[in-house]
Length: 226
Image (cartoon, rainbow, N blue to C red; front, top):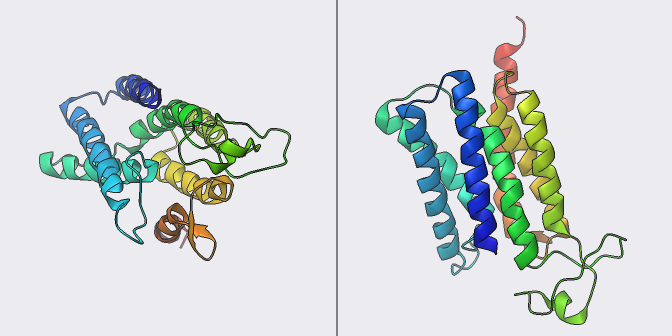
């Protein structure tokens, strides 16, 4: 079930990418190479995250790590573009596609993985006792539907990105928004805390947020009137 929705998410993302590339007149061999780099890099990133699960103290973990996949996809695009010498920006093509693909893929996570931490909120969900790595499922506790939170975030992001698709700089904005959201939603997830009551994904996101803040700060400084 998880793999089915991941596949549907990739398919939906590909359709959105092709439609947007055609609209912009950017559907060419170079942009398709960039897509290939994203897919290969994403797959490698997820596999490396799975390997890192067995390394004590490593930040990324789990063969299905979204953070590992996103990081790998971003690096894959940069490498692919560097190899073919393609210097045009592709982020605005990718952003809406990635947001919709993430929303669909997270449906599979919601149906097969541990939802989140116990909650007394009225929208708490009960997962089957057979759900892997879910002590709360065995005791029948209501838990945060953390993956539903993510689905809603990515769907809203997709709508916003489509409306702003001609404004530019979409992908960094989307990544920054998701990094902030993911850091906060981790407090409702069932992931193990490792230090200062923060999870591994949160410790991974802290330097990412710092780098993104520096990037936006430098951009604002360049665009400020002199």
